[in-house]
Image (cartoon, rainbow, N blue to C red; front, side, top):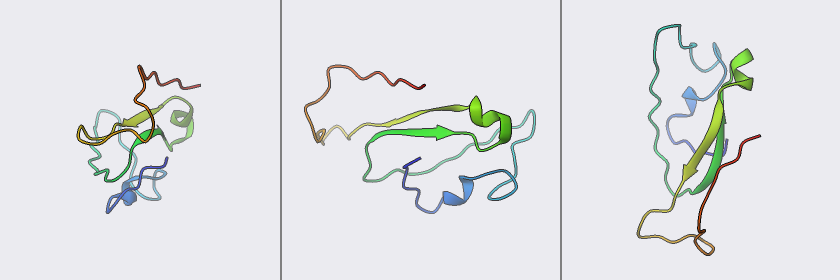
Length: 81
């Protein structure tokens, strides 16, 4: 949540609404571009029981030539409850 998706938002949504579900034994690659964003964002599945078990963090770091908008942290550790 929070990723500004340009020209690829159709792939983010519940099964049978914005896309067909991934079938058993198949894979799906979701390529998208992130521009002008940084921070820690959240992702999760939109399909029934997987909603509670498939989730995680997307960490977008500033480009090497850019700085943080605050003092650079010594260490970052994502915590998901």
